[in-house]
Every structure is written in structure tokens, then in C-alpha cells.
Image (cartoon, rainbow, N blue to C red; front, side, top):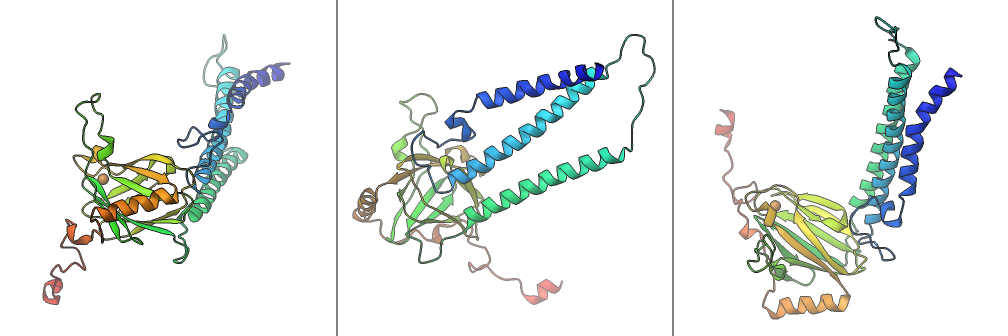
Length: 300
Ligand SMILES: [Cu+2]
């Protein structure tokens, strides 16, 4: 009798939480409230479903752990509460081997599991296209506080300026037409080469669900296939100085014909060639002609 009542107490929070979780599952929520998913339309890139899958699965596992933990906590608080007439400390329990082993092994399995799935997905997302599979190659160069885009195959470039506040619009709004814009053709294998001219930045297109740091002196890569046409907001995701918040850009994923037109418009504007590292602010890095320490000094 007494035993049954305890079980009932534990069942209430567990049942309440579970029904809350399960009742709320619409299609959008199945993607874990992540941005970029539109009902009935293609995912933004070939990687976004993988990212949302990892996110949602992790949440489900963590929620189950949470519900069990909260349930047991609440149950213990209620079942073992101090009752009228009780004095002193309750029975003290410690060095209970089965329990010690249980809460060592279970978290270990959880952590190893999260690590394994994250490593698997990261491996897939980080996998670069083979050289001859790359259909569009763009070098993205970050600089305080904007972006330059070199379209490598077409040998044209687009220099960017930092976000311009729109005095006419509502406070804090930006002149969208002035933002640096990266054009990508839909359905093509895209490789982005990430560079920096000065400090560490981070290339983040929100709806792509992935960001990557950009270091001076090191090239990072992103390989993906944009799968849905549209305009996507991009930001610098690494605090990089005073106007970091204005280090914004847009990505236009367009049809191949529109992409060709855009490239042609850059050519017509005389933006042929590539914006090279001569505009880098760090001119004294190793390999850029900075004086080397001679051996005598090194020995000192
Ligand atoms: Cu930045």
C-alpha cells in the first residue's frame, strides 16, 4: 500500500513532462526550433538535416535523463520528508557500491555516446570535396569589419564594406543593399576558403547551422551544397573589435543563370582578378618577409 503511493508520486512528474514533450511535436519542432527549415521545402544545405538530427536527438536523450532525475529528486523529497514526531538525522547511506557504479557508468556511456555521434557528424560535415568535385570555389576574406569575396574559378572579386546604418529606417536598421553579398548557385558543390586579414573572425551563415573560425595565416575550408534558393543572413561570430556587430553579409543562393549574370556584372564593373593578401594588416607574419631571428639572438 505504502509502496504503491510512492510510485504514484514519482509517476506524476514523469507523465506530465512526457505528455508535454510528445504533444508539442509539429514538423517545425521536430527540427529542434533551429532556423532555416521551411515546411515542404528543401533543407538549406546538404548538411542542415544532419545538424538538426544531432541537436534533436541530443535533446531527447538529455530530456529523458532530466525527467528521470527530476522525478527521482521530487520523489525522494516527498517520500522521505520529515514526518510529525521525527527527530535527529535519518538513516545515513554511503558507499553503496551498486549506486556508485551506476552513476559512474551511466554518465560515462552518455558522454561517450555524445562524443561518438558528434565526431561522426563532424567528420561528415568537415569532409572536403575532392579537387575535381569542386564546382564553385570562393575565397572569403574577413577583415575588420567586413568581407571580401574572391570567385576563384571565374577570377572576379567583390570587395565588402561594413554594415551601414540606415538613418531613414527604424533605429538600428541597416542599408541592406550595401551589405557584402556572397552569391552561390543552387545545387553545386561549393568550397569556401576562409582567410583573415587581421584578427580572428568567424564565418557564420545562420541558416546553414554551421560556423567556422577564420585565422590570419591559416586557411580553413567549408564544403557543402546549397539546396534551396533564397537570401540568408551571415554574421561574424567571433568578437573581433569595435564594429564586430556590423560585420554582416548576405548569402544569395540563386539559379545557375542568375549566378552567371552576377559574375558577368562583376566583370563588367571591372572587378577582374583576385583581392590578394597585399591588403592584409599583418605584414610581419612568418612567411611574409618579416625579419627572422638569427641564431646568435636565439641562443641568448
Ligand atoms: Cu569579425
